[in-house]
Image (tube, rainbow, N blue to C red; front, top):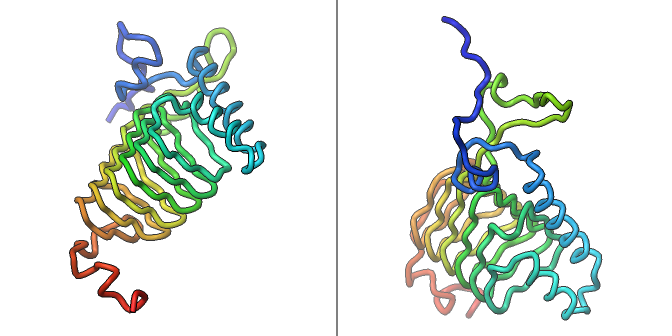
Length: 218
């Protein structure tokens, strides 16, 4: 079998930013994308260096980094976003320490979502063959590679335990609980507890799980 040559994106094409958001192969070394990532990195650095008591400054930074966020966003930090502008966040969302969102493709988060520490939302994808994945050199001597992304959608009223990783292309339904240390590689139906690597549903959440019926509320 003849070896296929390294992949090259189809032509003609839109801007690299448009190709990226459409889930197509794109060049992340594109100057527009580099500038957007640099801006987001600077905003994250400023947020992470600001005292937690300085609510006004921290909120102003979040407004600039995440123009698509709703009311009541509560983020402890440190935070790490690739772009920020590609993430939409609902109201009353809480994110604990080390919240990482590599939003090269749209990330949509509903209302009243709780993220434990070290949660990562990871839309970026790389080709499987090394011939397509490896960094290459442009005629001007600069280095680049080709990547693509898949969206992440998280419904309202979800809770993510610590050290959860969500891979691109996943939709998590409303009212889910994702157990600590889970790696979510496939869709999770609404009102489900899912745990493991890869994360699998283990139970449906029902009125039998009401706190008033549990030992800790007695």
